Length: 238
Image 1 (cartoon, rainbow, N blue to C red):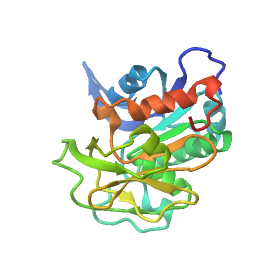
Image 2 (tube, one colour; image 1 turned 60 degrees about the vertical axis):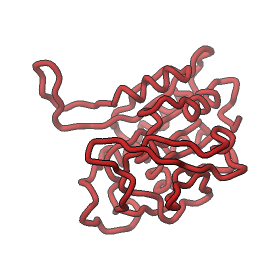
Image 3 (cartoon, rainbow, N blue to C red; image 1 turned 180 degrees about the vertical axis):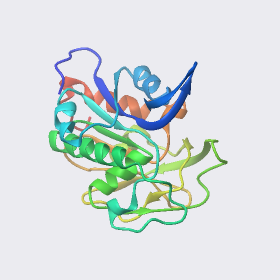
């Protein structure tokens, strides 16, 4: 953990794009949609961007943080969970997969509070030996357009303590959890039965959500991470 006594330092993983444009420039870039740092800031935290790096550095990076967020992004490469690539699965992002899996493992090993968002939830499941549904319908409104649907918490879970009743959330995904990773439990469902949140029921604060809280106004999930990440909280479930 970092030695801060003020606002917790939350590391957020980033995209790594071969070409991005701004001003007169068109260059490779590590980038993050502004909704992520804004959400962390609104919830009372400080944000550090974590672009893909050598996975062997993950322990050192996580040791300097109070909390970790694995952001949304491209599909997890199916070889990571023992499957062949389906025709609707996107191209691999191998540097991100390797780096973010190492961040997840480092956070779990150190007890650092961990939040997975969309891809991040799926990667958490894969890191713990689970598998994914490679394509599903009904959770994307249109290409490049976030939709909204309701998720219902499972009573008695960490997520239900954050959001006790069903609520509408911003969503954009075509993959989902299939077989749960070891020790994970489901803590929210969509109306069609899709797993919308997973968590570890004991030990450190670990939660994955299928939706995109950074695209909405609801601070509850990120605020819960920030509270757990405060040095006085010790990383445990609040």
